[in-house]
Length: 221
Image 1 (tube, rainbow, N blue to C red):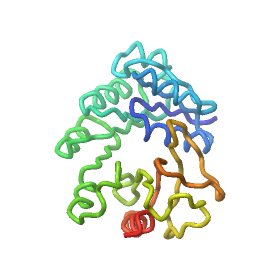
Image 2: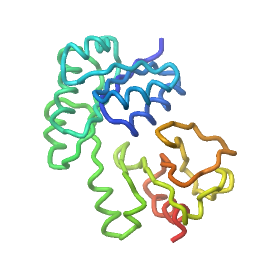
Image 3: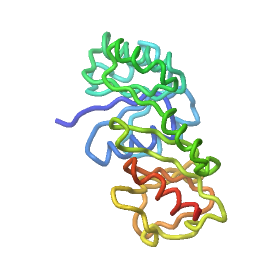
């Protein structure tokens, strides 16, 4: 029997995760309180969408949270993510909970409250800033799997060497992949012959050690 995953909040990360999980055979339900985001996410085939506030028990009930195996809180507010995970764990008895945390000082507290996994992006972003590694090109970097794997989001600009290239023409390092492309609010699962265009947002999965090499390949600097 396939496992069921509940994603609450977020948009870009949620879109990527939803598509990736669906491709792997998971059942995926998304809760989002922004109607326009729900409409965009609804274009992903087989994805269940619930429009509402995931911190409200009745919305979680509508999403059939009690049937979920994993709950992932991806909102921009740490307090909301904590409430979501606490409700999922203690009221709906979801076995595994994961929360995005924006304030690294809250990580230990989240673990103390029973959250199974906590993801924080601040430490990785700080390293990029200190290295002056083209912060303007980077929209977001999220570390997962105990900081061994990064999910990067890079916006393609006109003068970048990857602009107008096809994926198979890129020289990405090993253990890295462009897993998703966001284009004009549409999600694209890329193939080797997919052409990268100005304005695209590339969702890249890579090992921590390959991050700088990927940025260089993308920006040419």
